Length: 381
Image 1 (spheres, rainbow, N blue to C red):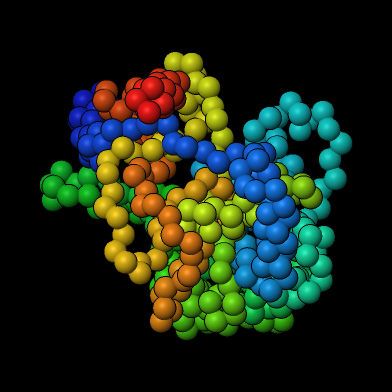
Image 2: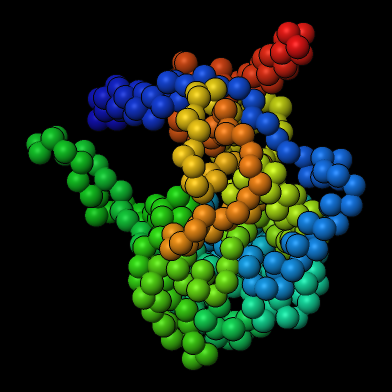
């Protein structure tokens, strides 16, 4: 029976890959421009870096920076919230986990919460902690544990209404029914959450979130999460993945230079969203399995935004600005030229066709193309 289904499954996978990769194949790609945080002091005029660092700290003190912690949509079997961090280490590098002296204690979720509170207090003081807001994204199977943990640990020192819990419903898988010629839900399949993309959509929907009172009982937020945050003065959202162990390091929880550089790019280039990227060197298919995707620049031209439109540019760091949909006037920012190139994050599932494989296997080629283009432009000038 398995052999009988092998060829139809291959055909189905081929059509799925073609469908996923269609938008990638329709564009021409190049290496995306990356702003290095280490060059922050070199990129702007002398003295301005300290000004933007002060602005970043003042934003933390005023409660304008919200921390978003993603626990749902993780690609491993361990429960991201309740698992001890040492179990994560054992799952990735078992040899190191066995060699180190371990001190089991708080689960991963509460450790991350305490790490965020401690980092904000160290950078901006206790007044920042009093206004700090955290949005927790979990799946429906984790909700009761999260509420219990928050109650037992007094919301990690935060005001209860400042810890927003957004639960994502898990769903079973589907199988193809030949008689009905359609996909039907498989009752015996494992429950899976949809992923972080769906979590981002939930921020815009009304009545999708709760906060837990001191008794651990949920209190429904009737507005959308974004409106809830805007009413409390939030402007930026800093996203963290709960399984990212670097969040537990005091120097990595909050990168003030990155926040300051993002504020500068907002003023200089109207940037309102930023993500972290890393340079990788892939030889053949080695290491591809550990990648979640690529960040590339699209050479497809984009029209200039209409007069008065809000900026929609990308820069290359962590925070993203919370849009104020009810603002009566557009934000005042220095004029900047319209972007000629879009920057896109491409998932691995969109890179499984012959035409998209070179993007994955030859990242150096894209960078060389970009460098050659710059040289030609300099010669023409």
